[in-house]
Amino acid sequence: MVSLRKASAAIFYLLGALTIVAIVLVNRGMFVSPLGVFLNIVDLPLLFAGMLFGGSTLVSSLSREKTSVPLALVVFTPLLIAFVFFAWINFAMPFAAV
Image 1 (cartoon, rainbow, N blue to C red):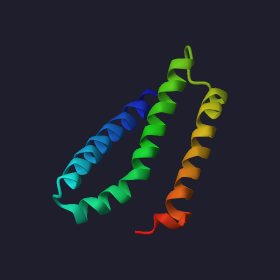
Image 2 (image 1 turned 180 degrees about the vertical axis):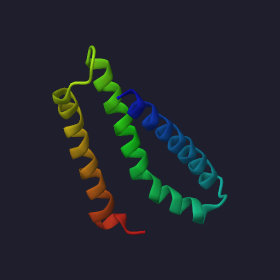
Image 3 (image 1 turned 135 degrees about the vertical axis):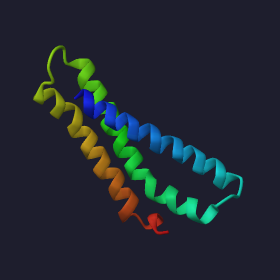
């Protein structure tokens, strides 16, 4: 679980930093078209990495010695449901058209 937490943390921090830089550049009117496409694409991977990072951190902090499978299921099942819901909102709603 520690390696999953470290890998998801690295991806989350990298995507988060790139998203912040892209938002600042778009607000200043620089590279609006390519960064607009980037911002439309990066939202779900950033959400997924954040949920993996948060869930794995929660599981590792709640489990005393080893990772327990029931605890991981209790933590990651609502996160999976939330991710599927946000993916549905992203792709199936009419305002999601670019």
